[in-house]
Amino acid sequence: MTTDFPKGFVWGASTSAYQIEGATGADGRGPSIWDTFVRVPGAIYHGENADIACDHYYRLEADLDLISQLGLKAYRFSIAWPRLQPDGRSINPAGLDFYDRLVDGLLARNVMPIATLYHWDLPQALQDQGGWSSRSTIDCFADYTSVVVRRLGDRIGRWITINEPWVAAFVGHLEGRHAPGIRDDAKAVTVAHHLLLAHARGLERIRDAAPRAKAGISLNLSDVLPASRAAADIAAAARVDMFENRLFLSPLFRGAYPDDAYEYWAGVTDFDFVLDGDLAAISQPMDFLGVNFYEQHRVAADPDHLGSASNIVRGARKLQPAPPITAGDVAIRPDALYSLLTRVHKEWTNLPLWITESGIALHDYVGPDGRCHDPERIDYYDRHFRAAARAMEDGVPLHGYILWSLMDNFEWAAGYWPRFGLVYVDYATQMRLPKSSAEWFRKVIAANAIATRDLLTDGQVDPTVVDQASVDSSRKPMRAV
Image (cartoon, rainbow, N blue to C red; front, side, top):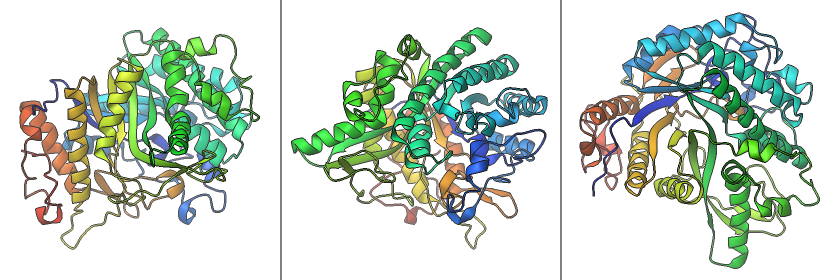
């Protein structure tokens, strides 16, 4: 079976501003909703915060050199709205200067910058005025987009408007596990709509300020399966699919919310927040769709289930996944990535697709030899790359694969225990140590630039990269040389 990646396929890694930058009070940056939320007792694992995080703000040049040394062809980062507009409106020149240096540093190292405009760090000043439940925040986001793109649009050719609106809306406004910590069903679905509308206004401002740039949105999409062939389980899985996938795909690509969304929220809201012209704006053409992939869910009907943390759809229960799973109890299912990519392409859009996040949480550590060996991460990416290649062979227009994450970082409510990075971070010393997976990925990228066909043949990882005895012999990793 031929499993070539096409010439020009883009390999990279990603981060977000709040998770790595630190310097939360430096050079005029204002507080975000996350700076407020991390101070809520019990909100964050071990009461941790991102005041320092990876200290990236002060270690920019060294981190840029690290990106170059890893051979990344693209780096996806987010821009901290409160660093640029401390109150959500007025401009902070020092914030713009920081991202100038970041973008120029990437280009000087021949790395493609991919900028995300909103990765959940709303200025607290705007939250105090209603946050995303207020339409005025949409106008502020549009103005913020103009400020950013007018400054950086001459050097950034690919923009993501909003990262994972599902998480910002429902984990932040229904579960309350994320900032701003609200638990209100009607408000959450209103926020989801407003985030989609902010995406639309952001697109318009990008087109105006940088008409040659490519712009899209990143959605966290999941592969949803019924627990059985029983009609009740199929219906429950359809509700979860609506909640996590179709609630966003349908307005973006069909200009309408799914009928079962209105049914699900009947008695909670009548969708009066959807005004004339909103859905036409949301469904305007974009240039690509970013897919953040982590999960497959098997769903069973449970009429008595009223919703709970991470299992929030009423009448439906996500089953505990069977092994293999990540350290965060997430199922490892490469075939689910194939299924999701092919479904999105066949059912929803012919747009180019980018995997803008994909990764595995592990309990990584530095061993007695002074290295961080993570063969499970190598195996994870090897099998997911193969699944992506298979989807492309079946016609999916996948243009890039951006890993989560460049380095270990502050993982929101989970604090610092989950490690997703290609690079190990010792938070006490801020030492960066590329893991075995980083060296493996560097060789994959280099080999891909020379002979893509050889990447996905049966072979073994270079023994200088990882102890092969620790890799399941039934899974043959992608050859790195």
